[in-house]
Image (cartoon, rainbow over the protein chains, first blue to last red):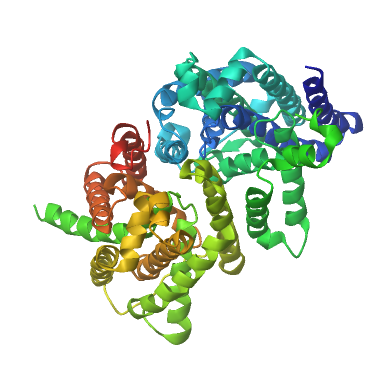
Length: 321
Length: 283
């Protein structure tokens, strides 16, 4: 138990660092970059609960980010309800959709599940594209007045940042609790051998569905916060397959199925992307270079940063998770 | 009444083109058990190759397609050894590399798409042939049928083709019978990529395209593979025709924008209720 606690505390420390520095320095620029990092962290941890613990790789996980974004946005846009309530409703709704979809697609395994999730994302994207009240392909835009009840646009930006920080901490702790619970053991059993797990009395169907619901809830809330801060939403940015793949990339990079892994993966990915986008030489080739890096990871360090450190440095073997 | 006949003919022609686009994906999926997520990127690569050859050498796509087939084969062969060989050869069975192969072929697609974006951005392109839209569709469909026949003959009548089918049915048994499985896997992947690029080459003369068009055909190809199964090229073409007809007839009754929604819903329903055509994928 002690060794695992270390990784949790380290991960918490990293997250707090990203929340506190912009706060203490009162710097909007730092806040913006930290916002992106925290968002990546939260998304990567959420996906890891499904992908890392349960072994179901969702290639369309961004669908929940988009659904959450649209629900929050629409609730604020049409009914002017409070942001907190809207975020919670968005999360619950996404989890319910996950339960509904999960009851069918979780019967598929491996690559078939992956393809089905891509299909779900594309289907919902094209549906939203055609729903007039959600703004169709153009999307929806907030009137600036909406931020008034949150103390003006400036305060609303800080508020979204703090909310995101809280969600990131919550999702990290939940992921830790799941991993060290009986429920988590069940999920790992499903990952290793689903048929054997089922034979040994794990209610695989229920376990998978709950894992899917949890890993859908948080991206939806994060999506809600993101698009609230953004002030506009459209199907292209809400349901972009690239973001889905970024999430997978971060989990793989950090170390699949670990607590600290997705955090490190998200930060490293964010730094790589930032460096590539800023540098003159690589700016336009950043996709190609991301592709090369991903390929190298898949081929040579499939266990990610955490796995690599554990293998290379003996001392860390029992500490990192 | 006329509108239905038009829709029908158009559906068949488009379907043949879709089938052509999916053929490479189906072959790779069937033989290597790899869902090639770089399929769309290679289709786009074929489109741009076709465009460049037409622009600089004034060779129309229906002739340059033969050149693209060769280039595609070479690129596919290289791509196999760069992105898949290490994963595939170390695994005991295909379940072990199922997910890593998704990621490695996806990174291949990022590399290609990033490169094309770097050169061409997302500007829409088109090849202006002195032919009508209907004529280009007819020409592309003709090639689709030729390719189907050629691939079927290759798979069923040649030694290499039989080896490929043997590997797709049982790789271990094939290896015991003296088949060089690594070479067969590499060649199958190369043929799949070569078909994807040839499809792109031909589609470029029918429809306008951009660097991001490939993903569209890739997603349609998933639906087609699930519809038509992976066993033989004829199945793929039939899957393509079904999709082409569905798209065109749905387009008559519902908003054209909703067609992708219907397509993907069909994909998901098929995956759930009719997965048995696909080498017993689920359960």
